[in-house]
Length: 243
Image 1 (cartoon, helix red, strand yellow):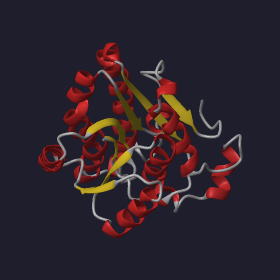
Image 2 (cartoon, one colour; image 1 turned 90 degrees about the horizontal axis):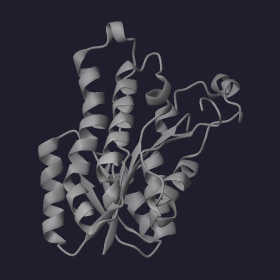
Image 3 (tube, helix red, strand yellow; image 1 turned 90 degrees about the vertical axis):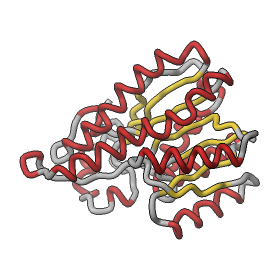
């Protein structure tokens, strides 16, 4: 059985991606979430409407031991299962000016995005190389591409993932495993709920926020065989705000 693993998949962009991978590519879904079990169950129901399995895996991607235990135990229980696609989507923000930023606000954001990428991807990359096929897709951000005031921690985390994407792509391309990053701009979600959409839309050439489903369409393409000659890329999806 072929699976796609989506981290931070209970809501927002992660939810849309998980549903789209099931719809378009017929993957069974491993849906990681941290704490919102109710939202994860609702998402799983939507995924299973596409006649695929969805297994819920609750763990914090920033916690190396928990990640290894949960994913390792799942693999032992499902020896025939193959994870072909990893979407590293889990991320948190703790915004504030750098001069006032506490250690916890710095480390928790870095740990979730950057260490989370390592903790999750490390579990499956060897298998992908052995099978000579895989898709690793990292959800980064406009903040990681251009930097964002008030988000030095988030920009640092996402900028690091962009560099890691380019480096890993060069390491493993010869085994037909691609690694790409998707950098959304302002997307309607819980993360942007407190933003002044009316003012921010004026800065965006397309004059609107994007939808999670639009990001999911791009990820679905990158996860497919159609994207087999694309690797090491950072693809912006931001309405022309910064390209």
